[in-house]
Length: 116
Image (cartoon, rainbow, N blue to C red):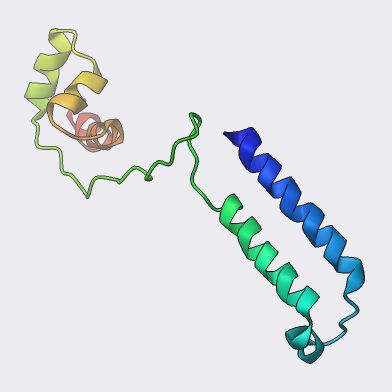
């Protein structure tokens, strides 16, 4: 898929390169009436459309991942200690409480330091 997009980009750039020497416009008013300038502008928009598409590694369009809102971790120091005694990892604890790992790390910074 990336090769296909790359090929389209190269084709558009070749068309722009072919039109550029034909255009001798020096001002905005000249370029507004110039057919070459109009065609270059259209090709530029097509090129931007190819560059701005979100393409995943597999070549399919993907929506960006949505971040969870501010989620508060509701857990006590003693619950956390109990999880650790059962050899439960922080990643598993975060998943159990439906928070991201960074939220658990922030909770640990605020709560474990004061208890030690």
